[in-house]
Amino acid sequence: MDLVALRLTLQLAFCTTAVLLVIGLPLAHWLVHSRRSWKWVIDAVVSLPLVLPPTVLGFYLLWTTSRRSLFGQAYESLTGHMLPFTFAGILLASVLYNLPFAVRPFVAAFSAVDRRLLEAAWCLGSSRWRTFWRVSLPLARPGILTGMILTFAHTVGEFGVVLMVGGNIPGVTRTLSIAIFEDVDSLNYAAAGQTSLVLLAFAFLMLALVHALQKRMPQV
Amino acid sequence: MSSWMEAAFTRTYPETSIHGEFHWSDRPRRVTALFGPSGCGKTTLLRCLAGLERLDDGHIRAFGQTWSDAAQRIHVAPQRRSVGFLFQEYMLFPHLTVYDNVAFGAPSWPDQRAQIEQLLQRFQLTGLERRLPRQLSGGQQQRVALARVLAAQPRLLCLDEPLSALDGPTRTELRIALREWLHELQLPALIVSHDAIEVQALADDLVVMSAGRIHQTGPVEQVLHQPVDLTVAKIVGFENFLPVNVIEQDSDGLLVEHAGWRFRGQDRRNSTASQSGIACIRAEDLRLQETTPGLPATNNAATATILELIPEGVMLRARLKLASGHILQALVPRAAASLKTISIDLATGAAVVVPS
Image (cartoon, chains in turn cyan, brown):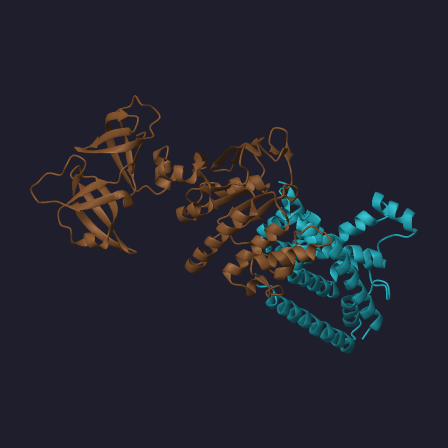
């Protein structure tokens, strides 16, 4: 098994999950509690990767981060290198592609918290920020963990968008899924089978974890 | 004393709108009950006062501050109103212990711990500090909720149907306890209720609501016994409504007549010019007497036939038919079951005549 690819895959999955936790929690909280009439647009954008072919997302990402685009030029002048075919590039692709896998469970978790509990906290003088930390977040925790596990597992198995944006550079952008693809392409079925088995066991473990978490939802 | 609460506002929903109007200028420590049928807007009024709903029109000023003003787009957040809101289902934080629930809104003063322990003791919660809400009985949950509200040191208490989530015996027990606590607290309080017994036990003043509007405000006994119109009479528990003609009116009230039956009633009509009205009579104020067959009833009694006798606690609820065809309900002792031909009489001052 390609241990370099394994290390890179885990690194990508950890980073994606961490970034989505930071972006996804406030976004989900906003989606649940905002009364803006246009919030459905944001909701639709977040859910887009569920129906969009990964290659389409990859294509647009390549297009917006290339030297020809303003964003690509700005990024290159700041960092000295381009975004495509780097770890940062596949991280960006992965974050965008996994947005619904994190945000949707987070939204479900926050929606399940009775609004009157938040109102009770406000009437006790608790600020919205403190209410978020002391009431919403602890009560939504199982759903948040589910979102994190799904994101992590989904990133580990990602293929299309990573290949489009990152290519197949060992140690930089070649993840386990891409390694399997290459092994099969070069008729190395034994290695492909070994890696596939590891990913299968991993996926099953993740689902078992999600199941265990859902059983532990707090009884209100 | 200057006005401690002055409010006139509207909250609009697609299918209904709720109007509230209060002006409390004196005796701020009184307990006021918002009374009316389910869905009449009582809870919405309370939520508007607590800042949990924004006003579509009007204003709320309390304790010398403007809390809400729709025209000026002022809406003071619930956090800054110091309104202790007791939710119908208590809304205890399910992941926090009894102690942490009570301490949640307590100001972080050096003696916070001592104050919370004092509250736990007062509400008989000592020994339950480390339990989670789901490990408590309904009565205990209510006491935790009340202790939690008081720990935050509110200026005004809003209790939304505080006893409705409890079963019979606990409800009676907690009603008595709540009455004592409210008396001790010396805080202005608003209680939402649709139970007349609860209102009589807990409140000093009554605000009767129906279909989003306030119909009558006043001291509890006055509102319960002197409704201003038919809607209020129905809400506060009058069960019999008879169309009457006014025969005589003097300083003591009215002498009215319904199909030959004459009785005295309190005058609650808007205009004394009208010669008609509706007499509202409570079931417990009608008295049944045996009459001798063949003899007419006296002037202040009416003959009636018993249609049905339904047991109700230690009493019987009698459905009676008057000669005019009107059906009345009377609460009578069990002994009345043996009566055959009856006449009906009224307790003095029991009939209230409202505009038709």
